[in-house]
Image 1 (cartoon, helix red, strand yellow):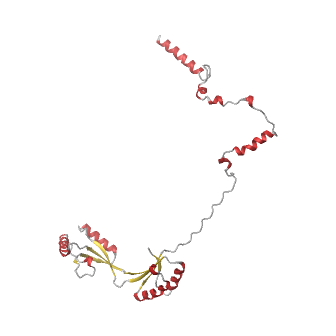
Image 2: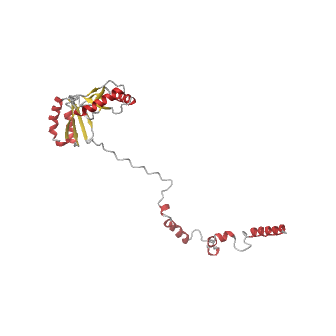
Image 3: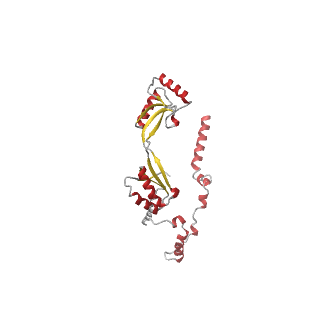
Length: 250
């Protein structure tokens, strides 16, 4: 009995599935889902055939470009040659805002200063003293005066370091007095290498300071020169062929 019932249910289901998309039971599934398709069907009774030379057809063709979308109307023809990009405007060279001259000896600096004074630069002219680095000192900065130096000496000896001396109170640089010098090196790289060795042995307070020559050199910095002043500076500098003109930070 159950098998017969199942058979008839299966048969009825197949008949429904067969006839439903074909419209045997009313509107098809596609028409029910998309009713707009029915509204878009053409109406043959509203169509009329016009001859090729019809004035009505010509007026419709003339009206088509005006009805075209702006994107299409403004589009360039595919065969049109590409427009060449405009050449970039030349960039004018900008003179440095700070110009530096020299390293002058004292005598040459006096001569150069007398000649450049004719430019009347006022505070745009700055004269500076520079000193060449001659060596680098590895040292432990001072702290707590002589007593602090004695504590550092004791610690260095405990670590097995005996090459040092305490900077005396007569040292020209007061910021280094009662510090502990650990060595003088000609290059900064050599000083850094020794600091690395000291760190590996437990000394972590060592520092490096550059030692400069006492004589020094004179340099001149000139700011915001006009083209006329720059030309006059070049003429003055020609009397000092050993000196160099270069840009500098303001």
